[in-house]
Length: 223
Ligand SMILES: *Cc1c(COP(=O)(O)O)cnc(C)c1O
Image 1 (cartoon, helix red, strand yellow):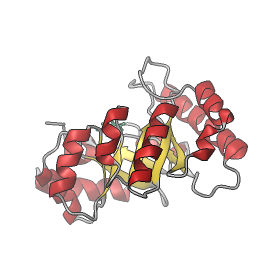
Image 2 (tube, rainbow, N blue to C red):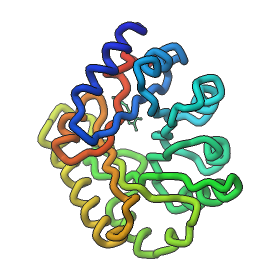
Image 3 (cartoon, helix red, strand yellow):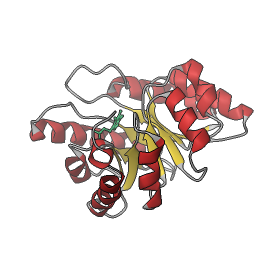
């Protein structure tokens, strides 16, 4: 397994377009699997459960940059804020406010992405495009000095139809352009488009992804 991971991390890295960052999604995988990828130079890992992530943070090398990519409950924010590198899945203003409040305690500024919901299939989390516009129009986010909104994140529907996936990523890219122009025109930090997972990251890169979150293609099936 460790041997496969070492090969896979290179295969996936080599298949990325220039400028696209790889978040290696290690949820449900043991420390040994993460170490195998780390040994090959990978430093950015994604996890989606607070407890599991905090345990891994404690035991694994401290130069790993951890991304939180799952649904985050507000009462769990305080546990990850001391060390998290990016929270990719901010899906409500309430969560954004709580990240800001906890980050202030540690005198940190936390990088975040707004998770948007463009998939046709019923997914539970993420701002609908209009909810996202309304939240940004309301303007209160501008007062949050301890979060830095760095872009958008989305997931496509879990389907085989490539055209559907492509059309969802294209919607996300168009929404990115609109939001960039409307609210972040002078803000260099707002530049990430996080879309693409194991089965669809090539399509995502066609649709201007800057960050892909790849799990099973590197680590194999989740344990
Ligand atoms: C699990 C997960 C991934 C990785 O999925 P794979 O299909 O294993 O690449 C990416 N993004 C999010 C938000 C996830 O929860």
